[in-house]
Figure (cartoon, rainbow, N blue to C red):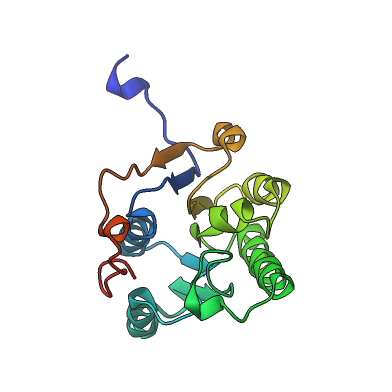
Length: 194
C-alpha cells in the first residue's frame, strides 16, 4: 500500500494500560504535543487528589494557555491499595468521587469544545468497581465526533483496561513492567513516579 493510500481520522481513542510505569507520563507527553499544536486539551484525573508533580506544572501553564487547557482533579486516592492518603475514605466516598469525575469527563467530551480529553487513571476506577465497564464504554462511544480521547488506563490511562473494550480504541499500548524498584520495597520517587 502506498503512503498516499493512507487517510487521516478525525479523532482517535488512545489507551495506555498495563503494570509498567509510564501511563500518566505518556498522557502528559500527548498533552504537551496537543497544546503545542494549538489544540484545546482537558485533563481529567480520577485518582490523584494529593499533590503530585503534574499539578504544579498545570498551575504554571494555566496562565499561558488560558481557555486552551482545562484541568479537573477528582477521585479520593487509590482504592484498596494501602494508599495512606486514602485510608480514611469509605468505599461510598470513593464511588461518589469517581462518579462525579466521570460526570465531569462526560460533560467535557460531549461539549466538543476540546480537541483532546485525557482521563487519567480511569481504568483503575473501573477495575476497582468504582465505575462500570458500561460507564467506560459509554464514555468512549458518546464523545463528540471531533474529540480525540486518551484513556490512561480521550487518552485513557490506568492498569487493567478491559480487554473487551480494546476493539473500541484506535491505539492501545500495554506498558509492560520489566523491573520496578517498588518490588524491592522502595517507595515512589517524587518527580519520577508522581
